[in-house]
Image (cartoon, rainbow, N blue to C red; front, top):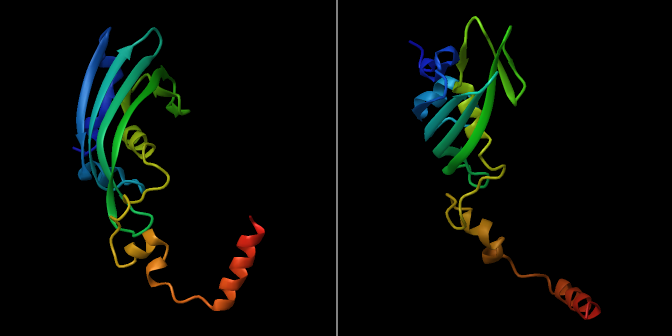
Length: 171
């Protein structure tokens, strides 16, 4: 059995009304999905599938944390994830995913949600990820936060005189 098989939902098997699913997503999941943004993490995924007239409404709640690389010190850090996402699905002749509606072939009737779960988590990661101030790893951490002020060499006195002229002109 494939590691990702448990993330397949048989839409034909959903009775009138709704049905709930839940999964715990961990490093094994991220390894099997083979995405580049997230390789480690721990997420709890809750899914409610509601059958509507011609379509299915899939409501996800994803909560936990994922590991990313700090943009400053390149050490691993954890980002909290807390997302509520809706996806719609319907039956059709061939598979199609336009971002808002997933068309599932009627003769199969099964939607594979593994990649959708991965994408939903990845979209919650901020563009810029850095440790909180003072928590970056490495010797350059102090320099990052004080702008290199601690080890600044003495300034050439000619620059000080020019700076005074500039300051006087700005008053």
